[in-house]
Image 1: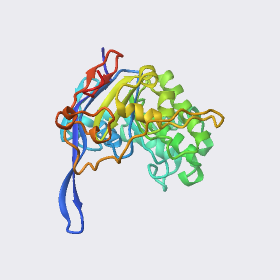
Image 2 (image 1 turned 180 degrees about the vertical axis):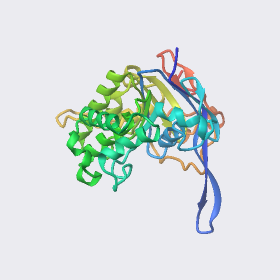
Image 3 (image 1 turned 45 degrees about the vertical axis):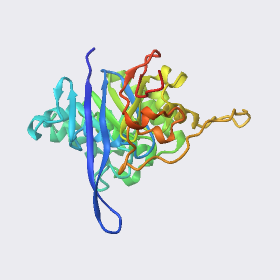
Image 4 (image 1 turned 90 degrees about the horizontal axis):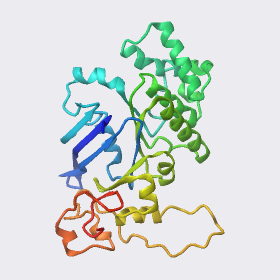
Length: 321
């Protein structure tokens, strides 16, 4: 199979200062993460806050340099590409950030925000760029006359539509969407998610869709990857994962999803015990073992690797088989 993106063994560590004495320590934010995305596919990346999802997304688009591993985009390794080598490739992958209030320059007019990528890459003359930007505004549900507005004149949902238009300006093959609707009202979330799904179908786009809201992920994703404390613990197609999760952490995440029916009587749920361990001192072996109901002595000393489960999922769990 041909992939638009292949991430292999990505790891990222950060030096931090802890405590009153200013002690130096190292945090492993992402630890040996591998996955692939096919053209036109959406891979949802989910997990609790702080698990490393956004760090993965930033390494994919080279906003962060991976410490180890490869990022292959359309067959080319971009993790180690120079600035000159990377510049023409940046037209093919773009990012939509979580906060539409912070990701747009408040001093620029909306039309200039979307035009800027075209200018940087030398695409079209002034008239052609203006025509293209007007078309993008209409496609994402904004009016061309709003091109003269500044971001403060837009609502939160409109700002995110503007960010999507900017990402589409260079006709990319891949968009990394980092929590693109978490800052929006629920009704606006649905509109933006539906817009992204329509654009994907029209253009054959691939998405890496980073989120913590499993309902949103289920709606837009083809496959889902679950992260815990910097590591992938399960990857499966959407139907398999939501109908029969294998890893105990994935099952706990799905158990925690609220049921939108106050009249429905719920069976008692198995909730996770304890807190997420600090990444400053992650547990040995399987990082999930201190909270796992299936944990055995082997889990405390041996790190599980992703293996193919009879369900079709890839699962990193000694006791799931």
